[in-house]
Length: 122
Picture 1 (cartoon, rainbow, N blue to C red):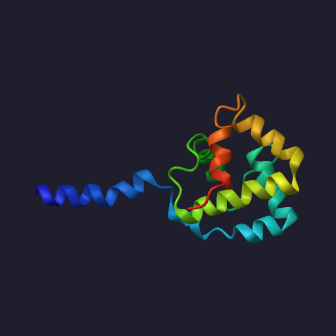
Picture 2 (picture 1 turned 180 degrees about the horizontal axis):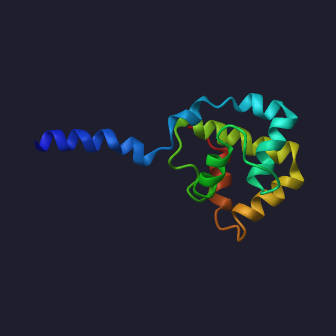
């Protein structure tokens, strides 16, 4: 019985410690490469438009935690996606990037750790 409990806990840990693997399958390159799609996701995150694109509402809900923890619950693929997306916002949309930073880290308390995460590799 004890072994069964340990096995169940071991199987449940990834479910608690990681974000859903469905986010691994998101085509980030397609989103970044399609200006309308990219704008739709950014508008959702910044409360400028609806969150009706695939997973956009879920992304918006977990985004504060992703920033606060430097993507601690992300899978390696998700970490890569976050890095790529945040870099694209900074490069392609610097004005919206400033708004993004002020909305999700208004006091800059996560900036150093999140920046380290962004330039890091797994």
